[in-house]
Image 1 (cartoon, rainbow, N blue to C red):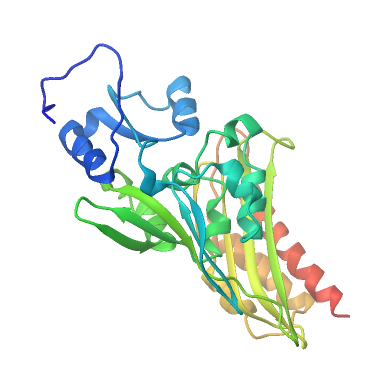
Image 2 (tube, one colour):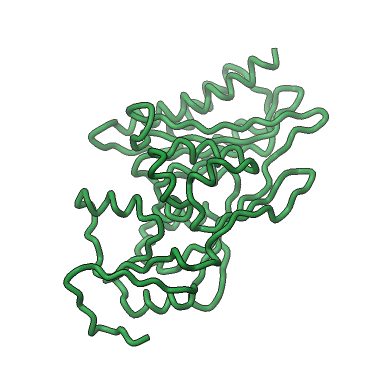
Length: 301
């Protein structure tokens, strides 16, 4: 495939590789003049708003069969391990029954027309997708094609790299997202799962805040295997390890929840934009998380 530097079209050209290696080689040759695209719903918004400039070469991943499909890898007594191809539509993710949190998150993303073309891989690769908090508390693993083969990386680690400014260095192709088993209800334990999105209006708007959580509930009112995440809008979502550590193994009390509220606000930095201040977002995230914990505490009484 001879392309090199000789191609300078006056309008964007769409390339349609049939395999991962072909797509990779196109990107290596075209470099910054190109970008990978699948559904393109977020990219289109960014181009139309002038946030980013449309490159001269669009490398469509739509024809690559390895990036399709949703299947259960394991179905054990402690939960389901789920593999989702990066090109699976958000609408399909919203209908699957294996991950309740991911389904809830995807059903709340944009309008139905967007969910019908937008992909889970695109939502993740953006670094700011509303599905990311739900994936974080599912310990999601990202599988990337790096030109030689598939390499695995924890979503949490990849997001940490983005926060350090490494996003522009990543030219790999996201192939699939693997969700680890979430806790299931036992004979003497329960399960806490939640996902919440706060936006400026009920639907079709960018989120102000998104939070998610999972954990095992014990009869004494304590939690174990607790995972919490916050994000939303143009911020990179993250886990809340200090809040998780504070709450793990201790019966929930009003005093403990007050400490958790303060810790969420200090642990997640939030962000400011014309629609909301960072302090507002931090408080909203803390309120949403603690309200779920309050429900669990009062249910035990």
